[in-house]
Image (cartoon, rainbow, N blue to C red; front, side, top):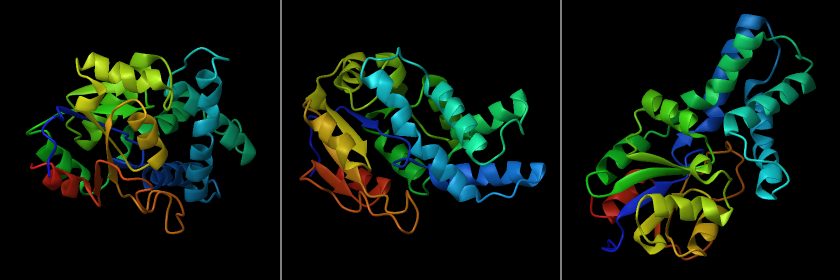
Length: 238
């Protein structure tokens, strides 16, 4: 049954709304063909993504000032290239084009239809660690119908630091309990619920490929549990 107190939905994006693994691997494969690299494009994408959380930890701990995810992604990309013996193989423009692969991620098939239905009743916003330009460009490329971009850059920090979620609710002019945090990751939902947000788990069993072992089920009694974005829209009366 739909909860009438919910006025807005905010979304984790990487993995929940878009398929980063396949999308980045596709971009790496295109560059590899052009450059004559011999690399496993999927392994390259996974290695790049593996540096995502560690790159943000110094900001979360207050050891470094906030840096946009684009900048962290670029540093991680350089490290992955060096590890693969490809250091210096891309010029500045080529490096930036590949780094912006994260701006061009493909949505899961149900994402745009589900979000479009949800938007008929609710305000929709990102609650992502992606910086604003990244999120805007991704939305334009993928047709994601956000009303606004919230998350890391407005708060100048990274999830699961509480200020990221709370700044989002504040910018919407809403209490946390009027906002439904939506994610495919149980830890993200746990952090939001601890601050008073409603929660929705959307299953994405292939985010990490066929051998995924995490987030294959709702770990707690979240407000909503759905097997797709369209399923969630149906549960919310859209």
